[in-house]
Length: 155
Image 1 (tube, rainbow, N blue to C red):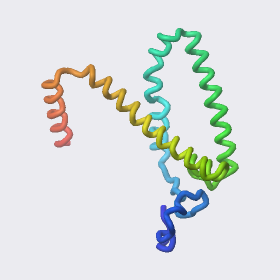
Image 2: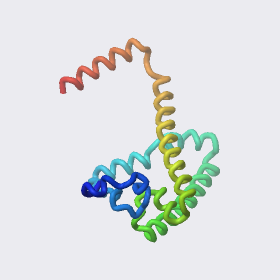
Image 3: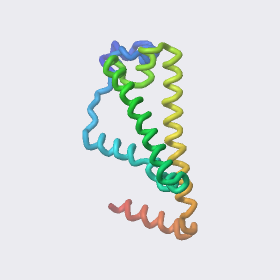
């Protein structure tokens, strides 16, 4: 949330600085909304692919891979937690990288964040395309879409 008019006229390059007060978020997300967001993140496309991974790898190797990923994720999370507590003014991964490692790491982290967001969107698109591949024939689908849009229009 931006401050008064004097902070609005600042140079745009100041917005990438973690200590800039003009880019501090409000942090007022209701707990119920955050609960749904975190649940959707945890129960995402990865959980949908677990049965196939278990079928291809077998029970023991799949459990070992999951445990290895658990260890890596927990260790990485603890490292990020410690760095975040050491740099409370940083509100994002790129800002944290800028403060700790410098400008080159900031660019690297920003690219990784955008790549991750793109991969989330691509994974969702692949799942939807796969689901639509098994959809009924087009005339049935068209009438279903028309009827459902009419129902939502009147309610």
